[in-house]
Image 1 (spheres, rainbow, N blue to C red):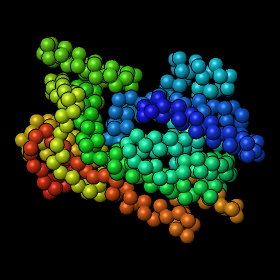
Image 2 (cartoon, rainbow, N blue to C red):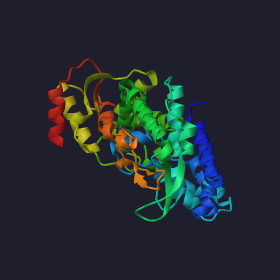
Image 3 (tube, rainbow, N blue to C red):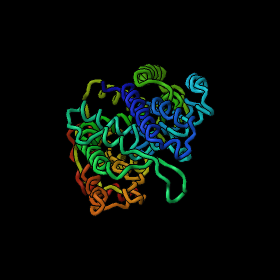
Image 4 (cartoon, rainbow, N blue to C red):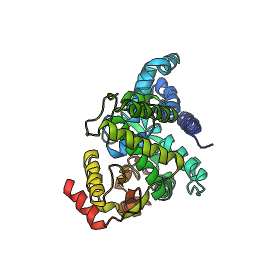
Length: 386
């Protein structure tokens, strides 16, 4: 299956298997790991994605303020029904521990199983997404998971999840497969077009007051779309009713916001996507804030004679795509950070990481129509706001 629910079950299963192998090898006892920590890891793995909401990754990538699916999940774990269930496990501070593990806070020795460069989440989704997208999964998942081990950090002197050197090849192949997924699936121009349209829809809904931030975080995709359709109709009938929600202060008027939300919702529902008018290398785009990207879109739309929201700029960002933030233990006892390894150590990824990332996607300009946009125009607009 290929839903977030089955993915969560897969992450839960893999985390249990990793904890069990550490226990069977005597590592938990040798490193004096709290039994409660070992028990809580699979719970954290099971619920790690509960904070996902409509457009969570999109808005995080865009840099939209106050949006973090990990932080949203943490609030769910410590309050309400989920928090109550976790506390019923009898594990000390279960809800609070799960919240910290999912957010990647580093005080737990086993935290790397839930959130890390080689965590159970990546071990599951790289294989699952590749399979369901018709791509070959070119790494040995069981071999890689068997290589996870407890090592003593040279910096803190505390135990952390690391990797035995025998699994370095599988780790490298997993990251190469991950880069291939970004290049062929996650950063595919058609996928990015739909995503940038969804991002614009959500931002317009938030900033025009059609949707409160708390509603976005709490409700399912279907509920959000249904609510937006109803509120757009109400606003049209009421001639611009008072804004609901907090808004983000970017100046989107109630009427313009409602019109843009309605237009983008209709297009997405009908799969009538914008057309890619221009593609540029990722290296062509400076690091821009959400406000700066919006200003670039407005300038380009004005030059092209388009209404606001009819031209969208997509700058794919995933700086942790090829993260090698994990300690590696060699047969001679050395513990080395993977980011320091090179071809002589049997690990070539660091040497080609920049090129793989640069080739993974493109800056895209998407328009509702047949308007032409030049590279010089887009570059000038981005430089003008940077």
